[in-house]
Image 1 (tube, rainbow, N blue to C red):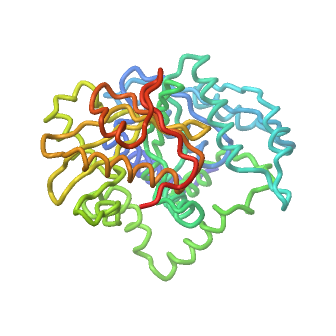
Image 2: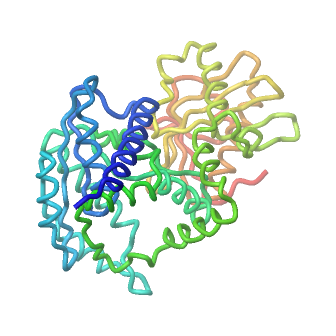
Length: 392
């Protein structure tokens, strides 16, 4: 039974969490009229809160969307979902149970030296299975219950163990699956969700994964919790940092190969780099070719001072380290010897990472720099094999 204090507190927390969802929806365009959203249900506090809150969010007059939740049975032992299923149905939300018990057997076969299951494989398989369910049932969006604490922890995980400044996105389109991943609780704090679930007496299922509390993520979580004690403003600053594009100062803008002749060759890493490539494309009327939305390609940019001279568009390498240069586009200010420097620097960068590797030029013009760089014409374009690092 609720006392009046608990009931008032529950209503206040629910109101704040719904405001977090509304803010995320407004700022990232997560939910549209007519959407069919499949919620990934682990049975933990976060996913239970998400189902409950989205069932409330449906009642907003300006938004009409359908939700269902899916629990995937991965074959983990000693999991009783009967109370969770009963609770979900009491909300009037469709409950789907999908068997995929072979996953646990696969994970057991890949235990590490400490006997722990591989979290990365598990995460990929979870996403693959829920994508499969969503496509089979006609859902175009999948919702996960990640919150702001998860986003900050992921950022520190990637920096600490992956040498990357990256976290997951509030909304991400998976082109290969035709599915949008959305995270409506991205602005919510974990402690608020915990209080909400506790006050509402939601039937949280016990985590039966043997890795629970024994992961790198747990180490980061504990370290951050300790850090927040001494620096109470750090959490809100970290949260604001994730959208603070105006003050994002790392080394991307100046990072590249600065050659003795005043030329700079760099792989495009930032929005500013792409704007420079777009300026060359517009000048050369290549805008029909360059959409800048293809994640399967990357660009190399050539400049001298504040003049942008040329770029190359390259497909991501294949598994045998074959690179396909799709185009070389240059301005009238770009000399052939400048193009040679661009090609040579690109070859240096890829060959010092991995040899042997192969490079094909498949562009429709500007062949001479490749011919003069030792490329041989064949049925696929112009070809060169790099068997040792290309050094300056």
